[in-house]
Image (cartoon, rainbow, N blue to C red; front, side, top):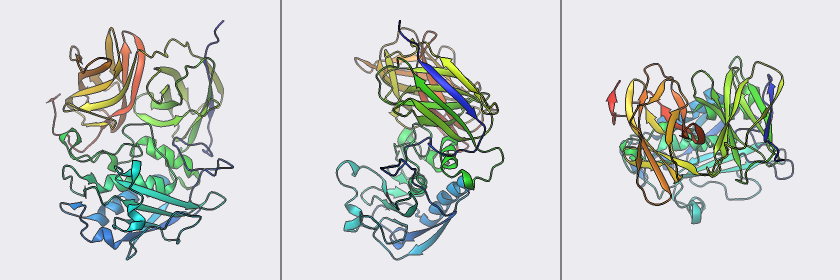
Length: 430
C-alpha cells in the first residue's frame, strides 16, 4: 500500500535561533549561518558613486538612496548601519581576509570588473563577504555593475539604485535569495520599464524579508511579540521534484509572511514571524510537481501536530513560473493599488481542462468572466484575468493560486504586491 505523505508541524512559541527562510552563507564544516556579531556596522560609500559614473542616468542622488536602503534594514533588524564617504575605489580581492573596510562602489577598476564576467555579466551588482572561522562577518563589499545603466529617478532601461542596494545589503547582513516574487531578496532584478512603469517595488522590504532578517538576528529585534517559529518535516511518497518551498500566509489577510526551502531530510523551519494564525502551503521550487495546502497553524499554541496529505495534490499537468502586466511576463511581482482594477497575466507550461484562479487575499477578487486562455504555442499556457483590488486590502505580497476545476495545481508565491506608490496603468477604478 502506498504510504501517505505526512507533514509534522511543531508550534514553537519561542525566539528563533537557527535555520532561516533563505539560502544563507554557512561554514562548510558546521553549517553555521554567517552573520555579524556587532549591533553596529559601518559601510563606506566610494567617491565613485558620488561622482558621475558613465553608468549613471538622470537626476543622480546616490547618498539619499543608499541611506534609505540602510534605514530599511536597520528598522527591521535592530542593527545600526552607518555610512561614511571614502576615496576607496576597489573591493578587497578574493581570499581569506579583506582589508577590513566594507565598501560600496561602482568604480571601473580591474578588481571590480572581474566579478562581472561569465554568468555574472547581467547582474546589476555583486556582494562579497569575508568571515572568520566562527562564522562572524568581518567585511562585506558591494560592487554595482558599471556596465549597466543605473538611476535614482526611475528612468526606463536603468536599474533602480535604491532597490539594488536594498537587495545587496540583505546579502551584506547574511541573507540569501527568497522564493517570494515580491520580496526584495527575490533573485530576479528588474529594470525600470518592466510592465512600462518605474520598477521601485523592491525598495520596500516584504514581510518575508523582515522575517528572514529577524530570524538571523533575533537578539536585536525590538518588536513586541516577535519572533515565533513554525517547524515541521515532510515525509512519505513525495514526488521526485527536487527542492520544495514552504510558505506561510496570514490567515485573515492572505498576505505572505515567510518562506523557506525544505531541507534534504524533509525538515523546514519558518522563523522570525509574529504571533498569529497562518495557513501553510508547499510547492516544488521549480514549479514542476504541483502545490498543496498544509492547513492552518497558530504560533500561539505550543503543541505538535501531524497532517496526512493525500498525494493527489501533487499534479504535474501544469506549472506556473511567471506573472505579468501590460502584456509582459516576468519572475517578479506585479505592483497594484487598493481600490483599483488591473488586468494581470500568469504564464507557465502544461495543459488545463478547466482553469480557475484565486488570490490569497479575500479582498482581491478575480472578476467573474474575465479569465482568458491565451495561445502562446504548444505546451505553453498563459492566462489573463481582471483582479479587483479592494479598498481595505493591506499592503503586502499575495499569492495567485491556479486550479483545474476544484483541484489546486500550482501557486505563484507573492506574485501580486499591493503598494501605496501608484501604478498608472489601471484597468478601471472600483
